[in-house]
Length: 180
Image (cartoon, rainbow, N blue to C red; front, side, top):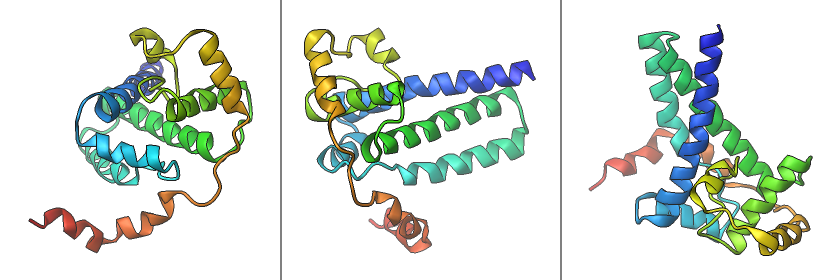
């Protein structure tokens, strides 16, 4: 039981590093497949959900759970997926809701500073840990002033791209993947 909990928590913690790598390196630093996809979100913050990423992840998790049962590796991967789910929830709230506490206010301010002032900084959405570790966290009075400015920003209105889920789940929408 304790080992299972430790594996799960390790997976959630691992997610924070994956989030930093995906957002910072794959989406901003290096020219990868993720860069143009992420650029859409910077142009239109309504595009916040990575629904298509959930489909293969859910499939992989199901296969692992059926094949290996509830082993430490499956539990670790479950923690990573829980971290991803938490990221999606936090990212949604950052853009579409007013903060409900000081931690959420801090995360929201940092992320909005990333969007509006420092696209090459503040890559962590759910944590500043890796930004601090790798020197991508702006410091000093300028960052403090920008965070204060961001606190007054109103949340977005309108719908997110999540409404497209029913279209994305339709088998015909996946046929385009196989066209030459």
